[in-house]
Image (cartoon, rainbow, N blue to C red; front, side, top):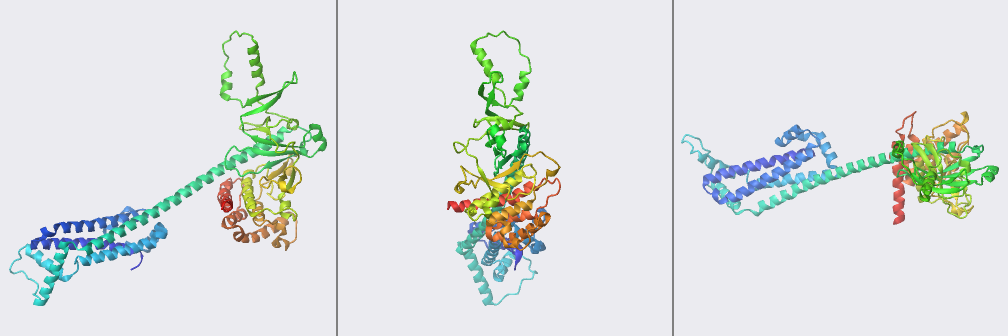
Length: 586
């Protein structure tokens, strides 16, 4: 017997045992000794009924999630139903029980064997005992003289039958330990079935909860990255409008790239000027600033009448306060005292920084941590603050591209842990900056740069703080906005996986350098071939991220790409980063 049908066969044994016990009870009543065995009989009957109910309920719990209640009732009430033998039912049970299926079915076989032994022990199928029971039941009705009785057996057969019957009666009366052992086995098996089913359901619930949490986490990260994308776009547009100088085309910005997992994280930017004359005139050539939605900050305000400079705390206007102040208050006569004059002067100087600023001039101010002003407009208004430099006095930082790091034979190569951490950071930044002015073309290693802290010493390179550079040239027909291709990110991830540039790999060296679309096609062809080796080098999670980048195709205004990217690129790379973090901890 194979498959799930054994569950129905085991179920059919219990009614047969109960029926045999009831027949024996009737015979004992006729023979006049039932009162001697009533206690043992009731215990035995209740035990059989108890384990029948437990077994039925376990089967119902198993079947009800995959079948309609009517079919389950048919199966439980009819152990011979052909539904027990359907292959589809067996497949469903395997899917439900998963790795517990084999042990579950083995336990049902054990229940079937124990029930068969119990049935045999209770003599439900012994012809000698059943004949005696039938004779005793016929005596109940005082059968008529003309009724036909079965032919008498030989004296030896009759004596043997009587001996077996009396032995069975005495054994049942004394409470046979074999029967107790069989019931203990049934108890053990039914409890095992219940535990196996419960553990399978608990694991299914756990996996479902994990999937829900994963979906919630993905949705939350998707929301954070989308919000960061809107902020990044607003910051660039705000800075672009805030220059208001003839030297705007000499200015550039390096945006700090970060893996943002919390909202409202400030943006770090290094502003630079390549015009020495302008730099000398405005007394700055490189400034670090932070840009956020802060409502409370310090602003340096100059009184145009006296030329005096004052530092005041400012905050964004409160709409409710503005509406209240619009209602004229009753006129009261005020006393003109030194205290009231001081309060009035303080109130008049506590104003928000200008929403329109001349950024080039504002950067000449040597104040640190102060608000330069507000760029943009609600809901995309941001405060600009000068960052506190790490070195004193601050020295200009020299950028070094990722291309230089990967190709240099002089600089030490990036260790794998650092490369994989950088891969996660760049993938997250791609999700934030794609379709913004910061990334209006392919995401390449030439655009990613790092700064040396305090001079040109290679040991002071901040590998954990990559930046992307963007200029502020006037917009024109030559620099129209384009989408950054996902394959460019895939190539970046490939190069970080192996610590080697694509153009230095043998797959790419086989072909001409090319230019334009030809170069892009040759790069992509070589990268796809190279990507087959990612699984062995970086693991399945890293390979999943790279594969998605090469296979993803976004059309037009399809905006679901970011949530897909979180699921198939960022989350797998997070697992890689956590794995190497755990290895470091060990």
